[in-house]
Amino acid sequence: MRGERGAATTDISTVVRHSALRSSLGLILAKGAQTGSGFAFWIVAAHAAAARDVGLTTAAVSAVLICAQLAILGAGSAVIVSVGRGEPPARVLDAAFGIVALASTVLALGYLVLELTVAPETASVSALFWLMFLLAAITGTMGTVMDQALVALGRGASATLRYTVGGVVSLAAIAVVAWQAHPAPVDLLMACWTLGTAVTAVIGAVQLRRLIGYRPRPTLRPAHGRSVLMLGIPNQLLTLSERAPGLLLPLLLAHMVAPEAAAYWYPAWMMAWAAYTAPMLMGIVQFSEGVREPDRLVATTWATLRWSLAVGGLAAVVLVLFARPLLHLLGEQYADASADALRLLAAGVVAYAVLQAYNAVCRARGRYMEGIAVGVTLAVALCTAALWAAEKGSTAMALAWLVVLTVGAAAVGLRLLAILRGVTREVR
View 1: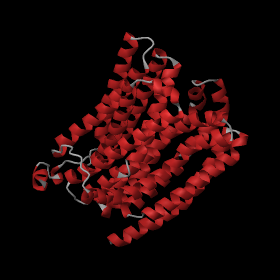
View 2: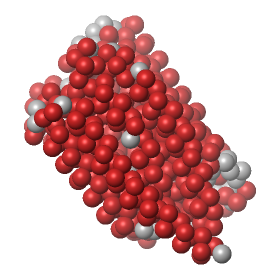
View 3: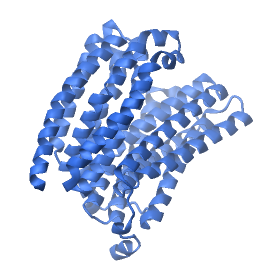
View 4: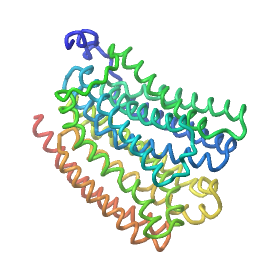
């Protein structure tokens, strides 16, 4: 059987790789397409359905994203490392898909049980709604693995097609539902959103088959899964340390300060995250290229950092210039409370780009414990500083966030220079 799988898969040395820049920009365009189509989806949904049903759907979608973030277990990063080292892609992908399919199913079912326990009113939602929730969690998690597998193969730019088509399909579906039924039922709202996620995953599977002849056959064989988890979990912990402040701070604000503080902070943070996404996605490509060509890690790091600053900086300039009009879309009070906060958060893209470059080098060099320790320390400092300043408003919070992030990036930057100097000496 092992021989048959090897024969059915194209030799990856024959795969024509795209440049790191093309992969990076393709990922950024894909994220833009996903964000734009998602924004349009919720605009249509808000006009087509009752506010309660839209709220239930957005809560379920948020839960899907959280489940996917946890269920990935670093499998995508493990694929990047394994494929970069020359291991057979089919065996690695089968193990990765088996792990994330099981993990996402367990987490989604666990959330369903928790939801029905703490919020019995959701029991009135149809079985179709929760079936779509389960399908979205599984396909969304597997789609993330496909994204990183294609990055490992030098085809990160293919994400643009996947997310554009998936977004258009989801948007077209909700438009048809809005035309045929008013108000639109909640289960159809969830089905429309899930359809886009599923289509994105299916296109990813087709792309992998055309590129290397791979057909998904998820497996839970311990021998294969163990190596994926050993590589994946440290990467997952590093990723969680990166994302924790943004995920946790709104919850901390709502429970420790006031719901209003969270309400004014969250829109500014989410808009700033649009600029931070560029360094984050480019860091994934930097990591992949660093594993595949360790001798070029220094050059790859500097090139990626320059483009992260250029693309992320451009997005940050737009946010700085249009902070008030963008927030005004949510209401005058949001613009008054958070426009300056958004400008300060947008300025943090420079520091965030340095942090992402450092984390990518830590991943490529196997310095997981160092990266995790730095990430956890910085996450605690960011949340503590923001909470300390919360009573003075969103602007004070953003200033505290920017100061801590900048100081952290300066320290990390010095460490990054030391690591890269060591790599240069090794190459010589």
